[in-house]
Amino acid sequence: MAGMPLQDRLLDCTDAQKRAEAIAKAAEVVRDGKILVLPTDTVYGVGADAFDVVAVAMVLAAKHRGREMPPPVLVPDARTVDGLAIEVPMYARILMRQFWPGPLTLVLRSQPSLHWDLGETNGTVALRMPDDEVALAVLAEVGPMAVTSANVTGRPAATTGQEALDQLGGAVAVYLDDGARTGGAPSTIVDCTAQEPVVLRVGALDAARIRAVLGTTVLHDAPFAGSAAEEGAGPPPEPVEEAHVSPVAEQPTASALDGLRPSGVVVPGGAVRTVEP
Image (cartoon, rainbow, N blue to C red; front, side, top):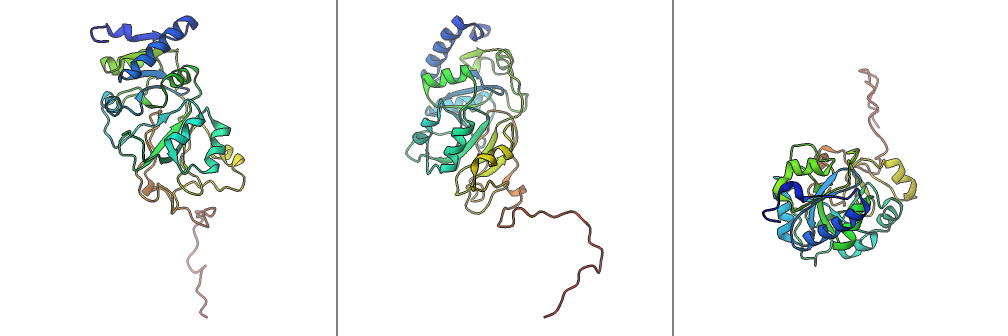
């Protein structure tokens, strides 16, 4: 792509015939170890082959971002998960069956045998199957991709291919343009590394809908002992959407009495007294 005018890197996916050619070119770029901008069901993302260490580093460099904010991995279907993660609980498989493709990111324990380097993940990986035709077509061709929002850190996430081009310029080999994306609510992130799931961030998928399909499995609204978050696994990999997940230390600790919260009612002095045995 060296020497090609930047504007020529923007490939039209809105036309059916041009889309097939653009996706084929995008797949070629990813296989060559370069980085790609593609639409998702929320905003545009910039990504690369998840197993190409240099290409993933190029993604972070294009965003001016360090390794402390690792990108999530987008997958073409739920069957890919077993090759990327270990100890996948049944409740996580239920969530995949119910809500993938869609705005749900699941944090799982990464396969230790995989030769990849997404950043400082502390042994976890965030996986999502996007509900976007172009993104899924690319993923079907090249496999799992490390993808984060297509923007320079600190600037708004791109909602069109042109916006991404204006920000990332020559750092990206090809930009797939499929019209404007809504840039709506980010995906909901759920930690699935323990016996019970933990919501790390509420996004487009609300907790009530998740609880409705989990049956007797308890969905926690804060990290609890035994979860990866509570064990100090660090922040979850950065979602495709630009959004901040509250640090674990700022969240209340869940317990057997997690359903009880302070009422906020002020108790007058003398209203409570200690009864001696």
